[in-house]
Structure formats: structure tokens, C-alpha cells
Amino acid sequence: MPEQRKPFWRRLVEFRFLFVINAVVLVALGFSFGREWIRNHEIQQEIARLQGEAQALQTRNLQIADLNTAFRTESFIEREARLKLGMKKPGETVVVIKEDGATSVTATDAAEGLSSEPADPRVLLVRDERDGELANPSKWWHYFFR
Image 1 (cartoon, rainbow, N blue to C red):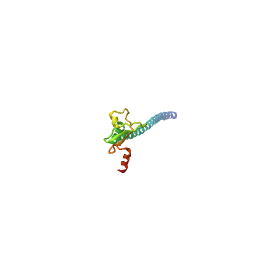
Image 2 (cartoon, one colour; image 1 turned 135 degrees about the vertical axis):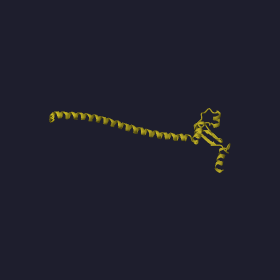
Image 3 (cartoon, rainbow, N blue to C red; image 1 turned 90 degrees about the vertical axis):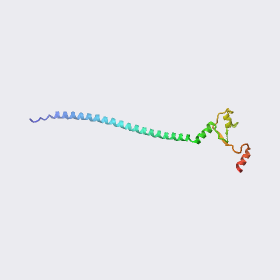
Image 4 (tube, rainbow, N blue to C red; image 1 turned 45 degrees about the horizontal axis):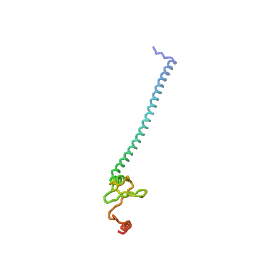
């Protein structure tokens, strides 16, 4: 028995039904693909932002390491000890110059507690070698002619 062909309207309905199912599946896949594409784009932006932040932190870390190295040098330690702690080397006299110019405090006075003034960071260090008690004109004479 030959197989009977389905009527045209029946084939059309089945075709439309299959078309609708395929269209729904394609729309669902399209939404899913779009959502994943947007998510991937956001993740890439986050990665770029974090890489920039990591680069900035590495630069800052190098700056801090350089600063730490500078702080450990002998010259920096000596400078800070002179300015903040009133350190002086043997043979040096420390003179503090005040803004009003009224009095000066030597480092020995400050160390012995004779001064009620706090240590001033503006400290002038003068070598005290052979010109101990000479008058100022004599010091200039020795400076230029000896």
C-alpha cells in the first residue's frame, strides 16, 4: 500500500511547528552567547585594571626600596643625627642660630642639659682645629695668607 501523503495544511503546520521550535532554540542560544560575551568583556576589563594596579604597586615598592636604601646610608644617618639629635664629632663646635639672634646654645650645653631650649634643626657646625681663641680678624688673616 502506498503511503498516503499528508495533506498540505498538515505538512505546513508541522513545518511551522518545527520552525518555531528552532527559532526559540536560536533565540535562547543568542541570549546565552550575548550574556557570556558581556561577562567575558567585563572580566577582561577587570584583568586590565588589576594589571595596572599591580604595575603601580611594583613601582611604589621600588620607590620604597630605594628610599629604604637611602635611609640606611651612613651620610643620611649622620645628617639626621646632627639635625635631630645634636650629634657632633670630636673637634667640632655646634652653634645654633636663632631667628631673633639673641643667644646661641652649643651642643655641649644642650647635651649637659644647661639649655632649656629644644634642639633646633638649623645647626651650624664649625671645625675647631687651630683657630681656637683667635679674634675674628686674625682668623681671616690666617684664612687668606696661610
